Each structure stands twice: as structure tokens, then as C-alpha cells.
Image 1 (tube, one colour):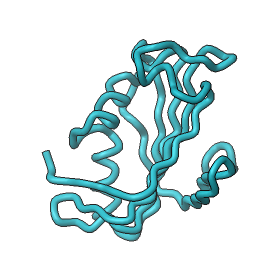
Image 2 (cartoon, one colour):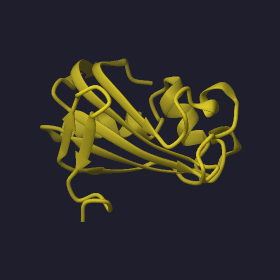
Image 3 (cartoon, rainbow, N blue to C red):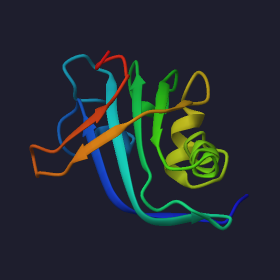
Length: 141
């Protein structure tokens, strides 16, 4: 596995009540009984085997028909970065190929490994009015 780390801003939007039940082996509290989430990272500093990851943004759209730990989920990651090297490194991380619980666990609970593509991402951090926009994602097409 590569030697990597990222730090910066992390934002998570979920369709359940605050304190996601799935994070504690519970069940989704959403009206639909499923789990839908968008997780975004704005990387202020970081590296992957010597590649600087600073300035990159990643947004991960996630869906499961029930609780995360029951599996059968789907994931799609969008990466906004300056170089092919950053894109390759972040793709490997978001597909769960380079360790760390969040990425490995979520990918192991999906029908297929997370799809990854480049996109322009806009993240606004404003408390409960924070928002994320991914240019070209199905919601914005």
C-alpha cells in the first residue's frame, strides 16, 4: 500500500437523522429506509507516495437500499484536481485500494467498486447552509 494522508475540510450530507445509525451498526432512520449520502473532502494538505494532493477536492455520492452494513450499495466519486498524478492517487484511495477504514469499508459494502471520474466541484462551508455542487453530475445535468 502507498504511504498517504489527507487533511482539510470534511462535509457529510445524509438522508437520515443526525447521528447516522449505520455508523453504529443501526438502521437508517430515513423515511425511505435506505442510506443516501454525499461526502466531500477539500484537501488543504496531503500526499500520496510523494505526490502532493493539496488543493484537490473529492465528492462521493453513496447509496444503499438499507443499512450500509447490509451491502448492495452503489458509489460514484468525483475528483477535482490539478494533475493526472493527483487523479490517479485519489482514484486509488476512493476505490478503497490503499487502505483506511472509510474507503475500504464502504467499497466492501457495494455491488461494484466505486466509479471515479473527473469533475468540477464547488464546496461552500456555511454551517447548516453548507453545500456541494458537482458540475456534470446527474443532479446538475
